[in-house]
Amino acid sequence: MYNYSALIRAEGQTDIGITGEGVLDGAGDNEHWWYLIGSGQYGWHTGLPNQRTDWAELERMNNEQVPVEQRVFGDGHYLRPSFIQPFRCTNVLIDGVTVINAPMWTIHPLECHNVTVQGVTVHNLGPNGDGCDPESCTDVLVRDCTFETHDDCIAIKSGRDADGRRLGLPSRGIIVEDCTFVSGGAAVAVGSEMSGGVEDVWVRRLRMPADPSADEAWLQWVLCVKSTSTRGGYVRNVSVHDVDSRAWMYRPLEITFSYQGGGDQSLFPDVRDVRFDRVRVARAERAYRIVGAETRRIRSVAITNSRFGVVAAQAVVQYADDVTIRNVRIGDT
Image (cartoon, rainbow, N blue to C red; front, side):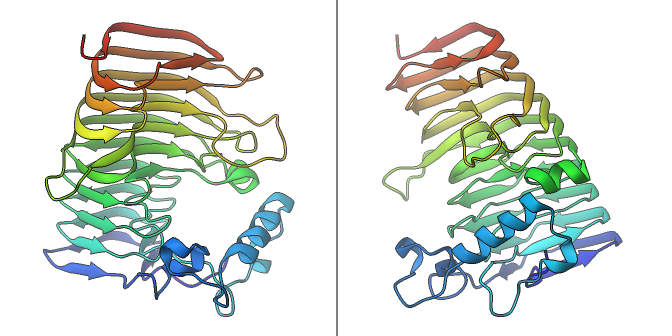
C-alpha cells in the first residue's frame, strides 16, 4: 500500500548503514502514533480517530487483490508506519545504535539481501512494537542485541495472505545469536504473516534474565510459530538451542495454527523440522504447546536436552507427527 513513509527509509540501495552510539527516537507515545491502535491502554478515547476502518479496508484489498497503486492511505487515514525500513536493499548494516518509541515495528528490512543488525538496543513498549522484523529477506544476522518490547522482539515474516502467496518471496538464512530479551511477546516469532514461506533459521545463545528493576520480568515465548487458516506458505528447518531464561514465560515453545484470522479454512501452512535443544526455563505456564490442524498436521519436531522448572500446566501436542521428546525434565522433581 501507499502510506506514510517509514521514518528512516531506503529503497533499492547497496552498501548502506546506520551506525554509532546515539539514540534514534521515533516519538511514539500515547499522544503520538500509539493511540491510533484504538485501545485505552495506549491513550485512545471516544472522539479520537483509530486505525480500525483503514485496517479492515486494507485486509479487503489484500483478499480481493486490489492493485497496489489503488491502495492509497496516508493523510486522512490512520495506519502507523515502521521506524527503520530498508526496502529491496543489499548489504545493510545497523550497528550500535539505540532505537526507541517506534510508531509501530522498529526495524523492518523488507525484501533485502545480506542484512546485519548487531549491538543494537531496542526499547519500544507501544502497540505492535516489534523489535526487528526481517520480511522476505535472505541472509540476515541479528547478533548481540538487547530487546525490551511489548510485542515480539524478533518476528520473521514473508507477506500476509494473498499478497504473500502472490509474491512468493520467502525469508531464508536467518541467524539470531547472543541476544538478550528483557520483555516482549516472543523472543523469536515466525509469523504470523509468513505466506511466502520461512526456512533455514538458526537461533542460539539467548538470554532472558530476571529484571531486578521490575516486579516481574516476562516473555511469552522463546519460539512461537504462529499462523492461521488463511496464510498458506511453509515453515521449514528452524533450530533453537542454548537458551537460558530466568524470566517468567508463557510457553517457551508454541506452534499454533489458530493465531488470528478466518475466511478460507484450507490454507494452513506446512510446518516441519523444528528443533528445540538445550533450553533452560525457570518458570512457565506450560513447557510447550504444539497444535496443528486435522487437515494439516505439523511434522518433525524435536525437544531435547532441556529443563523447564516451575510449570503450572501440562504440555500439549495435537495434530502433530514425529514429535520427539528426549532428555527433557518438566517441573522441579
